[in-house]
Image 1 (cartoon, rainbow, N blue to C red):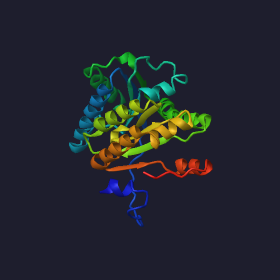
Image 2 (image 1 turned 90 degrees about the horizontal axis):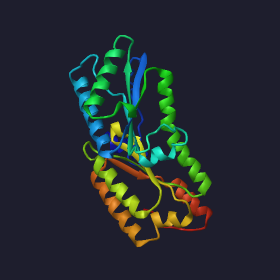
Image 3 (image 1 turned 135 degrees about the vertical axis):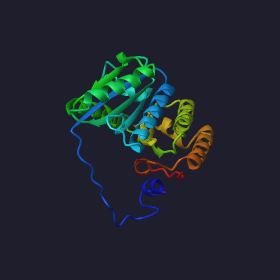
Length: 264
């Protein structure tokens, strides 16, 4: 239920009191970005790391893999920042960024364990970027944040608001909903990308229209889009814990253009 309340943007409840639990600050961070030729391989790797991390926590294992964060980037998200990061592999269908807090004593041990899991997952180490200190890890965060920055740049250039989603799904349902979104986006024929916090099954799927016609095609005008919208909404309502569309920018755009549209 906590996910429902947090994702409701204040429509279901108001939090009037909260207890903040503090944890020790980590000394160092070890992490990496892994590029996959198949999207399903990225899903499988994430599930493997989640299971190992869960076991580490439940059994209170020391010096074992325990992912602090897992981030996902699809093919189009990587394409969007290719000019900023030219070493991104040409055939990358997906990318996963991982982080784990470490200390001086166990850093080498944990690095070896991550490398072993990566190798056992049939991942080419040539397609893995590693970061072993805070400075290098900050460069990875810049990599991740560059994606929404590039989306904003496209929105300003096209002068058309993006159509964005923000959804979290129960464990085991993520690949299903991402594949569903991808199929519908391809059918619409408009540039789209998906990225976000795959460790929490929480992703952002964005459609970036190049013009007003594409925008209306995606959300309102065509009958095929209406069918997509209804089926998409039913699927999300059935399978997600939280889901909402970004409406403010869309409504402001229609106000500026003197149009009234029925809300979803």
